[in-house]
Image (cartoon, rainbow, N blue to C red; front, side):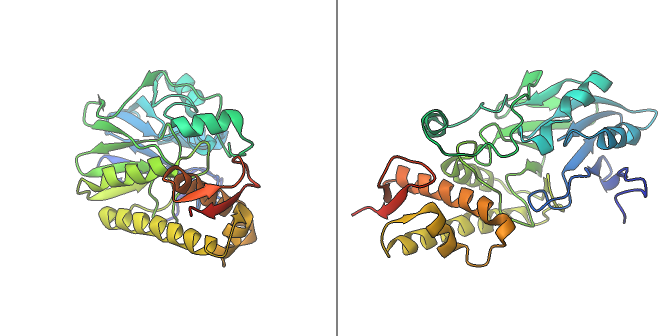
Length: 302
């Protein structure tokens, strides 16, 4: 089933009796087919992840609202531009308030806060520094409509202000879990220690379906969480193995670990490796030889 008219306007895809999906027109190697915007409800509609700043997508969202419906709530899972940039325009058009964990620095761990201030770590890819919400939600806060209720879970890792939203045994998981790729964790906005803790927290519950912000629904979500945790643990083992050959830079370790990554994704792979190196350093399994930067050499703890 096509998700887009010939004029480029997205058409809603029915996922459940009370849930539709609109695909934003922003495909890329990092966003897959584009950002999924979810419309939850049958009368007052909750919009989850409005998407990138796009007049076309704004028109698609507004056009998907039927005469007996209205947009009552806007939720943003995190403030990367492909999720949050359209939120204010949609709010202005509908008068619906925006719910999120906070701005781009909210939920950032102490180590990442320090790295952002004092180190030349790069990062900031796609961050919406202008994002502001109307209402801050925290873990186990609930927000309700006439025929839906969502509960918030703070799931930092991909970004400090990342949240997931659940209703019964279905979870809107943002960028924390995706079926087509592992999530990018790019310091200082992303924190791998937090990411793994969030995965473990989600794994404590049995889920029926995950609705990610990119790609198709995940129909075996607990199995996907298990895979994601094992995948990260495998990357950690690969890094430690590489460092057995002696001190290496982030670029050298990335080349040793990601042997088949396309050149277009090498920088993203470096950011993931950096996240692992910071996590391993915090756990005192490896040591940076110099102060942390993109050119720092790392070695195994002796």
